[in-house]
Length: 354
View (spheres, rainbow, N blue to C red):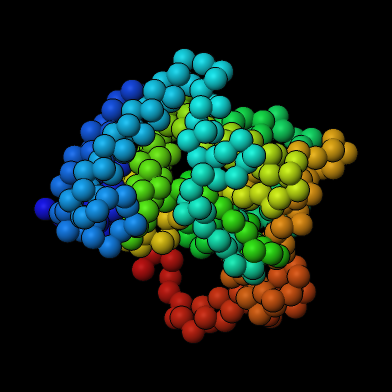
């Protein structure tokens, strides 16, 4: 028998071990794995939870029954979405949100304190620095360049942020680090997001529900995939969130701004460098409806501020003045080139063929 922390750890490692090559094998494998692992949890582990039931044994029994029903409902909705059933999105929405846009379960929301640090990275084709605009969000005028990603369909840009620079690099598929640009983002007010992760301390039944949804939203992808069936459930999640935002704003209430999620890069990148669960939790923030003449979503532009982009290559090359705006120095003796030259002057010289 296991405890709830071990159950959480097993779910977190699901995609490291699981094999699936279609949507159907993904949802059936996830379902079977989840139910088996939940069944292994010792009844005593449920004593401190806030689940329904007069005692730990009944709490586990009621939770298992409820989760089986919810999982079957979710999987059927996902199948319908895959078959282009237009009503599937509305049914998925009703799993988490009420008609007025508010969440059914308060404990699925995570609050991000004001002035929290995030990072975003962008690869460059050459050694260059972008401006802030280039690191923020692609302009609506260039929506034809927006591809299909985990939480956004093609043509609809979302703001993806990471809590650390390493994950920002991984999310970009490990581009040449010398050529990337990166900025630090800061939220200017408190932000609420859907916590689509696997908690290590599950207390409420909605924690167990979101853990299953996380399995479906963090499936591995490969560059060989022509159709990313792994994105169907994340797209449903984003569509539900956007519908909630519109409802909340129509009722003059503060909407939930985004989704906190587990990056799939921890397993579809075999040599993820750090064994730290916190390093693999990323964020995505959708745009809000705005006027055509507004090049960038005003909601996100007001919510996040960012530093001038930096480049590691330019940092190494102009390390003395890295705190300045351009990170470029005019005095050659202050550059890395000069320092390297100075080092080589200490080396002995030999004939070319020695």
